[in-house]
Length: 250
Image (spheres, rainbow, N blue to C red):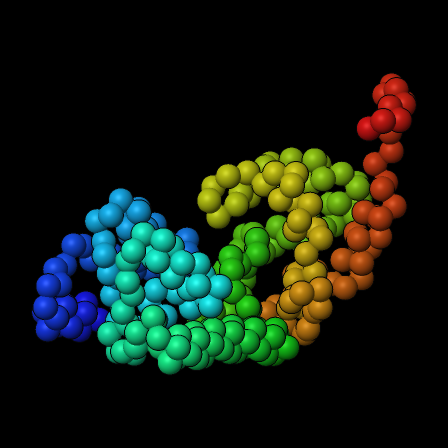
């Protein structure tokens, strides 16, 4: 792309390259790009008189952002040229072509987003892991959840211990005594234990946006045990100690 732009500049009389602004790894769906902001600063300082890109969607894929950028360019007397979509934004036909190209760029981005969403839903319906870090007790192998002993055995211990004691702190102390930690080597905290005990994934289900489907991974607890623990959570079983005063505003 840079070679095409430089070739175009070389063919124009009086054009000279001031600086090449690139944002590798950043999406053109928004303007949160360091090189773009650096370019805007140079434009406002009067260092840039013409912005040249390979295509319009290299500048932005958002019609709203494009209009704002064009207004910014015009404010500081900077022009804009797209090398492969040659048009002059100062003419009605050029503005029409600009709007058409931007509309198709946005349509392509939205279409790609819909495809990704559909793919995620299909993976969930098939019971496949839909991405992210593997839950405690599992590890990823070929994008699938497989058992991760001894943590996989510890999950059942956690559910049974909570069902008996209704104490998350007791569950964490039990894991510490058995020497079971997170994959990072850190101890299992109360918050982590709470999320584990609330996670229906351990019943062999795949979760996606409030829905669950039969998963391809092995269950670590039964539905009955999981539902029992959830019921205990709802009952708020950990009663107030007799020596703690009533604090109504907590």
